[in-house]
Image 1 (tube, rainbow, N blue to C red):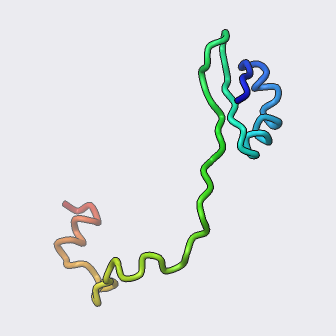
Image 2 (cartoon, rainbow, N blue to C red):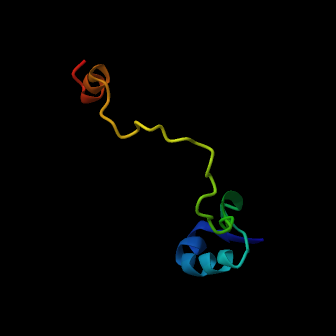
Length: 78
């Protein structure tokens, strides 16, 4: 793990981000005390289309107009 002061972090941020992208963690210090860390973002696997299939049933009337009493509620008339 690398430690850098705030001033150095500001001056070399692009380089620090390149190093973090390779897996390195960087601690930023102020007056010798750690105040922040720059760490790599966890990688996700690729998304799979249809992964949630079957978890929700779309009702037959999902695109029908709302009942009048609910329309007033959502239009802000109440």
